[in-house]
Image (tube, rainbow, N blue to C red; front, side):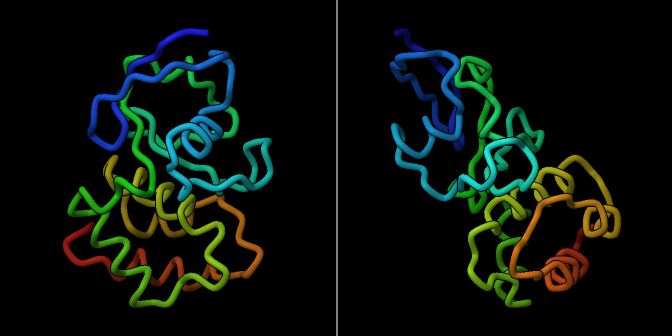
Length: 151
């Protein structure tokens, strides 16, 4: 058991955990109540659990809570706090991307991380590796390509 401090969606956060090897996903969902981050496959393939760690898209199912000590974590709940994140969410709605919506928070976080790092819309739209069982990939691409003011 121990304490860990990190920044979560821009807020300094300190929590007590039983095991520093617990996946970040479970701490976010079960201990902190941030249920927008979803469990999909548990082996870093589907991307439903994608969050940003220090601005980089990471799969939270395989990142341990101990790995985020002193770092910054952004979940789907924090995306609206960034102007680009808010634009991306609006584009998602305008293009009616979600069907079941289960994988969408991970797709949004993956796209946001890539765009925020300066990747082009075209490269981001064609480079997402998240899995969507509903097959909304064309709408995802359209939403990313439609973003105003983004290269």
